[in-house]
Amino acid sequence: MGLKLIERLKKVRDLHRSFEDLIPHIAEGSKEATIKAYQTLNEEIREISEILDEAFTIGREFEGSAKETIRVLMQMKGILEDVLSNLDDRGKLEFHVKKLLSFNRSFDYIVTENLNTLITYAEFVEIVKEGKIPSSVLDKISEVERFAHKLDALIKFLRLLYDKPSDIFKVEFSLRKANESGMRWVDEWYLQKDTGLSGDEIRDILDSLTLIGVVERKERGGGSVYRVRDIGED
Image (cartoon, rainbow, N blue to C red; front, top):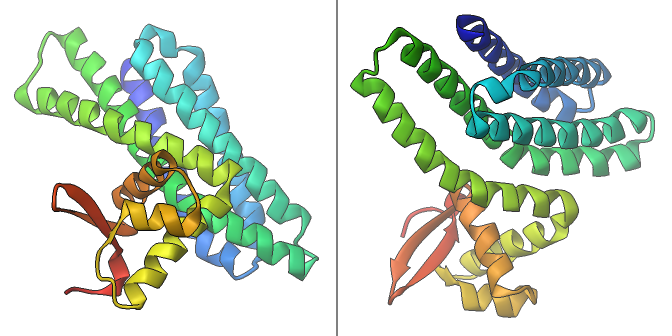
């Protein structure tokens, strides 16, 4: 597998970048861009599926990351199919495009970082075969471990975004509304009271919005407080 696997994973990463380049055109309602994005996504899925067939030879962690990548790619495929089937219905199209754009915020981050992680694993295996483990690779292993913690939070968020997008919108809207009304930093208790969501759900959403750069967090009085990143500085 070795170098061929690394090249294939880098090809998938390039395909994903091409897919993301089409998102602004999909947002504008371009039929051509939507069809091209669907074709590109299917190619990503095909490549990762073929890699997954041999993933067990790399290791359980590699196989798990590959499976998670396939899962989120398939979720995006379903959303994109909804866009394609409603291209001639402007009202329905707008709804499905908004859903796609919201989903894509976490989707892009997870797929990009997951592919980078898979490439790191593949490079590590290749170096082990050569009998050399330089410090740069050991640093990469540490990066993979740190990313695994972030990925857990983002997977929870992505499932919420797919199953309960209104909960994400509630939290972000509530936080933005509070910031714009003069509350520069907002605590979880306020958001829980304003949205009616559970504290655990709000924390999962806020953790992920922070990771993808939508929200800022700081510690104050022994707890975390938040604000929307584009609101501005104190």
